[in-house]
Length: 248
Image 1 (spheres, rainbow, N blue to C red):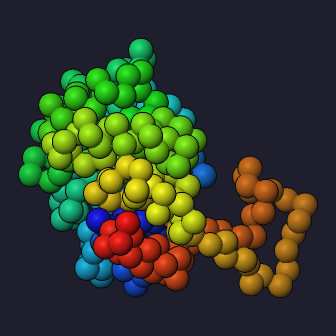
Image 2: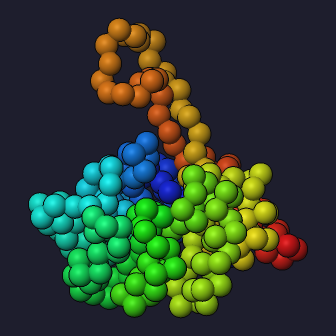
């Protein structure tokens, strides 16, 4: 079993590697569930890190129903990731009725060619998880991130266990959402999934001496703080995963 870290920057990806994670889902805008990271973030990760780098390809927050322009952005970002030598990409597209958009995912798989493609939590927003899983298997998707269609992986643990059984090693089921050292043992025991996904982040407080508390740049409550993956939290999670894998 291994830990994948949802890293919101090169610095977070580096912390994930230092903590012992085996793979990074590289993204931006964690508050929106993750969007496509910048070219520079991807390039620096590929050039300087030794663990697997899988950028998320998601042009915006919100739903997973994309117009033609957004789909062109997704295609171009996948071409970019392939040219940079990414180990894989993570994406997801749904139809308006909640089905997996098999036609568009097939196009993306063709563009990716030999570069593996994983499916993110758009899966949890689909209308029928067992059917959606079979669709993704048919399409050749290697892994799906899921909370079992619940707010957290712990809340959806029983559904995740069913999905792992249904998958029968044809695709990886990776639990994610709210995973930490307090619940990883229960998730391993319940789901027997092959890998787990966590952000393992801390809040970094600003070192600014002058702070204008009147102006606002966005909707975040504290704009003088940001999130960063903690290598200590990653290491603690990896240690517990190893422990409970050997002694469940």
